[in-house]
Amino acid sequence: MRTLRVALAQINATVGDIEGNARKIAEGIERAKEVRADVVAFPELAVTGYPPEDLLLKPHFIALNKEAVNELAKLVPKSLVAVIGFVDEDNGDIFNAAAVLHDGKIAAVYHKHYLPNYGVFDEFRYFQRGNEGVVLALNDVRVGITICEDIWYPGGPARVEALLGDAHLLLNISSSPYHMGKLVWRERMLGVRANDNLAAVAYVNLVGGQDELVFDGASLIVNERGKLSPAQNNLPKIFWSPTLTL
Image 1 (cartoon, one colour):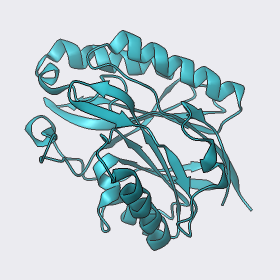
Image 2 (tube, helix red, strand yellow):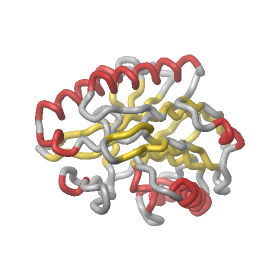
Image 3 (tube, helix red, strand yellow):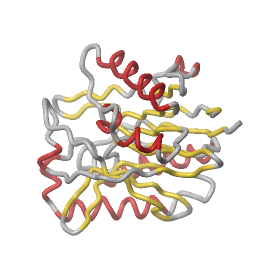
């Protein structure tokens, strides 16, 4: 039997406030250490805030966001893994990305595959698509990383990470805005993904408001049978750290 203690830090990030957002992430890392978590996850684009929109056209802004991630990596000990949403840059292209921080450095980077371009979303305007999965080996538990929209597709990267990467847990960092009825729909979808892939799903979402968007948090964990964790009745909490048995 394998166990993993997962901390979900559904922080309220502010668009453009890299310094302030990094400070909230640093506080979350410290709390994860206090509760002896194995993994702590922060929302999609937690470093820049969501949606950063035309700030992404400023190279200085991208550079500052990457510097913040490098500094945050120094706070993460060997006993912890932190997964943090940020903007990555490679050969002039930028990506909606998740940094995997461990033992004082960036151990891996995941790029979001599915870029929404409907309703309030226009990610396709700014970002390039990723095309590779990331699976971490932690204490005999394999953890697959995805970002927001990636988990909504049945045949998306989560499927590949579960089947080919043998992931026991699918960790999804998200900035999913609220609309009426979405919470129930989202819970049902995450349960189906877990059941289809025979892997638990941990989902961390942003909280707060940005112009016309409201982010409802509602972070959750479902087991491999698609059932919500019994600790779900503790929500809403800014920091939730259940122990999973896998």
